[in-house]
Amino acid sequence: MSYPVFTSLADVRLRIDAIDRQLVALIAERGACVAQAAGFKRSDAEVAAPDRVAQVLARVNGLAVELGADPQVVEATWRAMIGAFIELERAARAGIHPPSPQHPD
Image 1 (cartoon, rainbow, N blue to C red):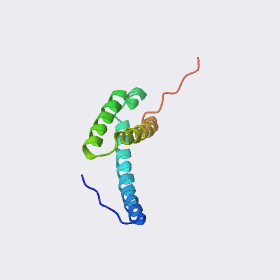
Image 2: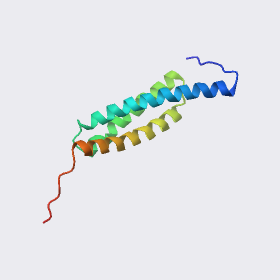
Image 3: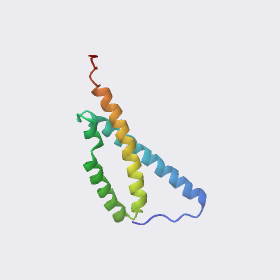
Image 4: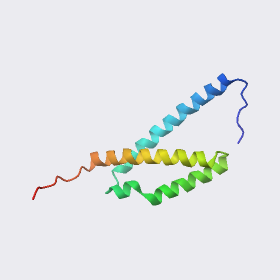
C-alpha cells in the first residue's frame, strides 16, 4: 500500500486530523455493536471472552502485516480498545440484565 508524500508538517497534521475523524467514527460504530452484543451475553465471563480476544488480536496482527502497520502498535492499540470496550459492554449488560436483588438472611 502506498501513502502520500507530504511537503510540510502542516499537511501531515491535516491528514492525521482527517484520519482521526475516520477512526473515531469507526470506534463509535464498533461501540454500538458492542452495546448490542451485551444483550446476547449472559455473564461477565461471556463479556470478557478471552478466546475471542485472542482471535481478534491474531486477526488484526495478520492485517497489520498485510497492510504495512507496525504489529506492536496495532496489538497495543487493540488491547487498549478491547479493554475499554469490555468495560463498556459490562456496563451495558448490567443495564440490560441488572443483578438480582440479594435477600438478607
